[in-house]
Length: 288
Image (cartoon, rainbow, N blue to C red):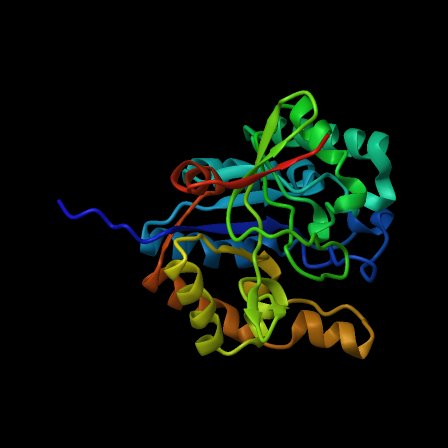
């Protein structure tokens, strides 16, 4: 038997509703009154995963798990991994340590009640930064073993400058560890160019995305792809956003499904747990 030695990349889905847009969406008290469209995008994602025999990690918003426990049950039934994407979709700097702990507990409770077992976490907006590194201790306290919150380049709500190109261990002061599966940008002329998810996946040409994957695979490193159900919804409701935000969230939506299909056909993908198990970890990040 020939062993496929190509890196295993992470396929991740941030399970949010169409209105969960940081800084610009409706206030939380309105959420219960808005229609759910999460099934539309999820159905396309499930179909692509089944077609290519891929299992992904679905980072579920606790609010979604509480409102739609059937979504979590379906993710589990299909053999995918369930992670937490917080409860209320708030960035970490707004929460602080105590607020973050309460939000995380609420998300874990909602997901568990819906039948999900969580060992992985992703912060909204990749907002786990050097200023909120205390979050790793809270995650470890709750038994979270894997994190996918670090964006190794500039970003509106996050960004952490680290000389890493793949998974690594975050070592806490007491010796406990959390394995980090970061989102790593492509380096172009010394600049960080994200390419593997969200608006970048929508707006960048396929050739450039392929180049990013080729660079990662030559280095033997995994890519972390992230998408949202609203990005695979062919007719999502549109919020009244400023022009720049409308461009960021709505332009190129029709390219996501074909680009994702293209990537799944060309590369090996799995859950963040599978990627962590398969990868050679880089130098640890020690938080003392």
